[in-house]
Image (cartoon, rainbow, N blue to C red; front, side, top):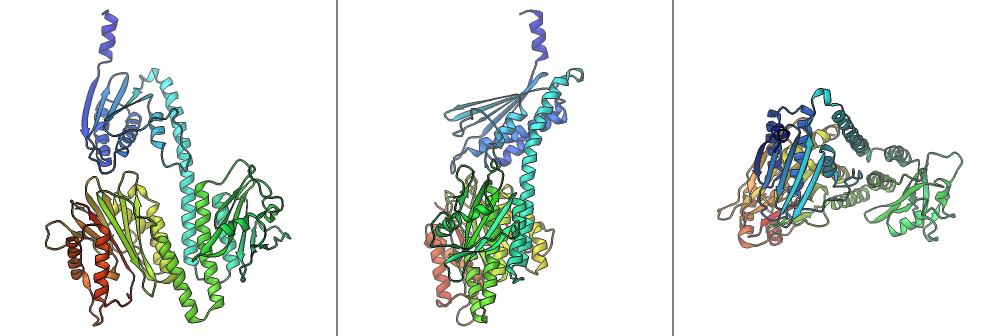
Length: 595
């Protein structure tokens, strides 16, 4: 070996750090901070530390993401070495792994994955992913900045990377801005529901907002006629002077996309490759470009159709914009039905119809299926009383096998309570990044909803619980709601761990404590609304929390799964009130750790 080789070896002398962590998101974050501190000791500049921190977080989270639900994965090994010329990191996991794409690009805004790989590629100079049976290794390398006099090439490359990141952030910011605009508009319309009888004015303002947020050039709103035989034009935007769109007969042919959508209760798209029929009345408003027609219903009854058009041939509506159309028109449908009820009214008939609408909204909030969460089993029920309120529950599964459980009760009855329940559900679902932190999730939801709830003197109680099958535990937080009830194997009786904070809408800034409760094999837990504990028998006696704890203990002892446990509780509640109709909604989620 000559002297030049020896000199090169000395200049490239490396120091390294190796750590081993559990295959968990929290452990990845903590390890990343430790690695950042170690790199800081090697005199890396702040920009380099930030780049490595983000790359290591994404790489570690990717390893955790591909764990098999219900398994006990081996730890993740992270080894990082630092020389004078470059830094190298090796992340070794023992999951099934994934197929590295042939080309890593910035995914579409609607895509739920791919941004992590794009960030890793953008923040490093080279990436190698070695996938093997039972072990995968991700190798990332990034050159250290040269001395200041030699830094121009690295600065150019960094500038290019920053430009790519800025473009990605610009797209994300635009998406967030659109979501914020739509949420503000929905709050505004929710406050107006039932307050105006001028359906056309309400519809015009709503459609204009929808067109602006969804970047549409035109809109047509038609309502089903009183005899149910045709679609009559209510609005054409922008208002085209003397243009009049005649009604379309539902019994007519399907050359009209509005008729086809109304008959099939499905969205119909049109674009330059599949344009409107030459005889379609919509061609007078939307002759070219892209569009969609949406038929909207309430309580399984057709109300009308809404069509949006865009002149640009190369800009179809995105999935997010179509979701906005559905959401806005759902608000409009409620207002239209309310106005019709007011026009038809007798006091008893209006009350009955409002309750039917509220019940439909309430039913629409409930999950269609119960997600799997082995080794846990879930079962839920929501029994409406004669006076429909704002009870609802939600079961939201995540990509890592965990499930967020939500149960809530909005103050009041009828449509306003059911509507705010829908807004609360949408608000919680919009923050998946906080699912594992129920306390912070409730705090953020409270700040979002406070002004609208307080303005109409309403509030909501809610219980949020994050069920983690890997850790066999449940993390819960409460906003003035009934406590979580838990029975542990071998316990004489169930208990109610945890604390509670103010209901949503009472104070603007509230910190909600959260409680971690282990759920070992055989354990059972119950989330519920006060309709259970406030059940009364013929003598006027209330069931109460103490009796409900006893019933949960009996259910856990006499049943082996969540479905049987749920039905056991419902039968005992019916026996207590001698099978009389409940006076309040009764909603519950039964959790069982299958032994």
